[in-house]
Structures are given as structure tokens and as C-alpha cells.
Image (cartoon, rainbow, N blue to C red; front, side, top):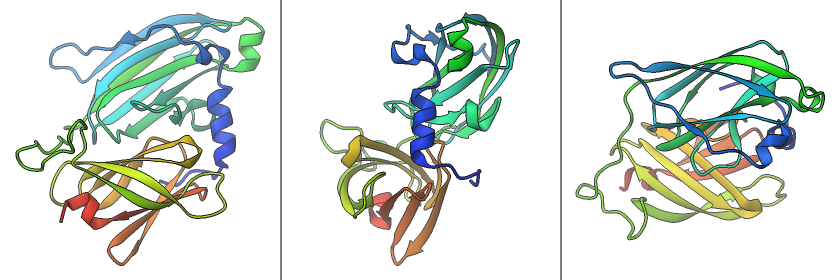
Length: 245
């Protein structure tokens, strides 16, 4: 989970400034795999402020891999999880190959664009994206096994102790959990101050992925897992929320 540490503000700025077209995206192109295949190849051309957007439906626990070849070194790509406005992979800082474990179910967005300097020069680029999804999804427990909160897809909701980004003091966040087993395998979705929306995937009680490009670490404190995101934010996840026990 380690990567060169950058501040959250720098990564968020990179996401926001990745390309002017990100502010008003066109309708994404749906990505489908041929029967029996786990991948496909996407080709296209972008120029100036224009960008290409691809929508790919996948499940929590699966691994999404994206490799880009482009004629212009100023081309990059991001990956954004469902419901999020923050990239979980930022090509400008992480390179031309992504391999990310998906924290939740739904439609993931792949954005490819020219970085601001190249876009301002109205440069163009021909590209190929190799996209694949591997591994079996971690299915949510059906309502017959674990009742859901009415009107939601969550098995439970609860307040959490947290320290959101840019906050100097501890706060309270609201969490919803989608349990995918009784062993602590679950997706926890957290909302809190500063409009934070965090998705965390736990497998057997261990956090393995999130919807941010920031590095993630964790430690135990009694019956609670304390998740740290990039040294800028913290979430205290009790075992009972994950297991329902």
C-alpha cells in the first residue's frame, strides 16, 4: 500500500486540474467484454481539451487493470469509483499502468485526457487502453441472511469517530456497511465534514482498498480498526459494524 507520500491537497489538486474537459464530461462509453473474456482493448484519439470517458461495471474485490499506450507523452488517465468525485488512481502521479482492487460494486469511470499544458497547446494523441477485470466479486449478503436498513443497500448504519481531511480535531462521520460475509469482509461507506465520501473495502477484517489514491494503513485498538489515509484523515471502524456481531 505504500507509495511516495504526497499531501491530500496535492492529489486532489491533480485530480481537479488533470484536464479542463473533466469539468464537463461527455457521456461515457460503456465497456463490455466478449463472452468468455476478462478484458478488451479501447482505441481512440483526443485533442486539446477533449477527453474520453469509459464506464465499466464491476464488483467489490475484483481487480481492475488499465495499461495505456499513447502517441503523446502528455496523455494520462484517472480511475474514479462509483459515486465518488475523487480519483482512486491518478496517472499523472502513478504512471501509465493501474492495478486497483475495487472497494465497492457499480460503474467505475476511466477518464483519459491531455494534461493541462498539452491541452492548452491544442495537441493531439492516439491511444490504446488495455482494460481487464479479474477475480470473483465479493457479493453482498442477501437480506434473508442480514436484514438491510429500509430504503438503502446497507446492512447497518452507525456514527463513527473520524478525523476528516483539513480538520484539526476529531469529528463524527456517518457510516453505512455492506456486509459480504460474517468474517469481517465488507464495504464501509463514510460521509462526514468537508464533504468527504470514503469507501473502504475490508477482507476478513483487514482494509485492502479505498476510493482514493492516497496510501492507506491500519492499526488495531481493542475491537476497533483505525484506518489512516495518507496521514491526513482517520476512521475508527468497530468490528461489530463489519461483522454484525
